[in-house]
Image (cartoon, rainbow, N blue to C red; front, side):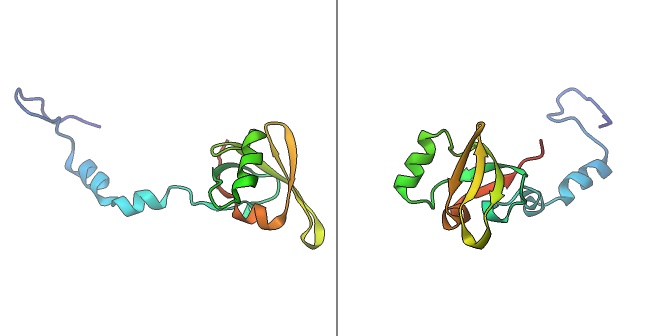
Length: 115
């Protein structure tokens, strides 16, 4: 950023008009569209690390069991194994493996991590 003038009494530093146009050209909706979307854990690729966004859609008793095991909103999890013919799905969180039903995994909302 280059400063054009620093006159006393000026409330803000002045920057080049082209830089201002670049900043203003990105609307709020464009900035929000670059934020990662929540997807179902079942739709994430096998082995990819994701961050758990929400446990809200789950049944309260299952939500309680998962939080007791340390799987809470914001936890980093990985889809380890998908069984054939709609069988259980294995996820990894905090070094432990947990098997869940496919309809339960569909309800888990996650966002991809870039680490």
